[in-house]
Length: 122
Image (cartoon, rainbow, N blue to C red; front, side):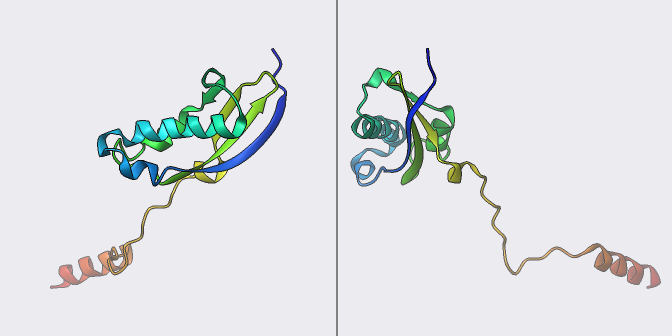
């Protein structure tokens, strides 16, 4: 069995408007089927020759069954044997930052120490 790469491509797979007509409780499984259909169409392979990475599945199901992402960037690698491996593109693997709430600030340690000193003096 050889693991020589025939070619590699990066695609953005859009899920909507197909998911808008799908019932809310079936959207994440439908998104996975859309990925398989997309890979079959663009890489010209059968269902048996598609391997989807676990990170792709986790990314689709991250928000639950009702709210999959609107689109996903995938890296498709076709091996000489005719097998296509589906991975997340590198841009989506990195973690997102936590939101910063403006207007609310925690008091610093020096401010807390000054308040304690004022209370002791009184």
